[in-house]
Image 1 (cartoon, rainbow, N blue to C red):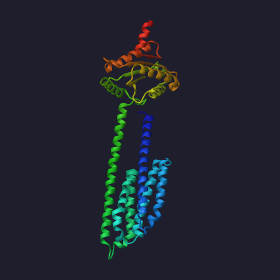
Image 2: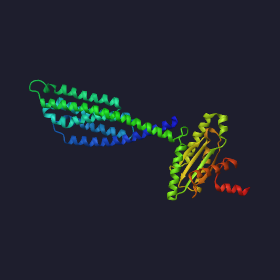
Image 3: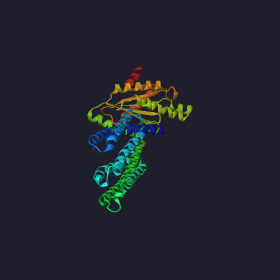
Length: 375
């Protein structure tokens, strides 16, 4: 594919990714609101942070969800603000329990059984929201912050005479687990990045193998495969199948007079015009040089002829590259005794009959018979 086609494909993929993530973030926001409201309703009377802080957080989540729904924010801003909000809630709760809620023994079960799982989720979320390098930095910062909160908030209770050895052991284990989780998440993110890169490269190679680099249409190989499948399906189920060959008239003159760059532009715009007239089930291909092929499944002679005439009129109206361009069309329907090769040969023969008859026309078997009668 050319750069324009690659860029268009990339932009479409980005839009699709944004829409997919937008739906996920909206569902996540809805779940977060339910959890926050439930926690607020079931709070202890002495839990000032939940009583005062959670209503503020709920309002912030609602506003953020509204911004996501209305598309007021770009994807990076959505991800960064969502992660920042989650980090503030998780680390804020940790700060409360380690600094203001009482002794470490009183809150050890809550910390180990609940809040440190939220810290673990925050570390994993960093690799979902950010790339590998930023995920490692963010995860490391979260663990470092947690350790600092333990030291500044409960350090005196964990060391010295009468220290809570059980709490110390649990907290050491928890932070060891968080470090292991960070390493595992980084390893998985690395494998994910390699897999994503391999999939992108495989898709690009597939596109390069099946797509004409100039027009972005199917190339001859891809069209041959598609036509082979359509012939088999038509034979099996008794469906109609037609092909249209298209050849630009006097294209060599365009190249000679205006240069090959202008000729390439003509081919690109002709391909776009033909593709705009085709149905989703049709295949439009650059067959070679200035020749194009349209494959029309479940379409008989009359429907294919009408399509060819529409394409001819559209080409004249479009004036590709600003030139008054004409083309000749050959229309052939798959017959009972036709092979794939014979079908294409008949379409080519009709096209060249049209060339001999004066170009700038659609040629079918009926037209050939009519010309024979006139002579």
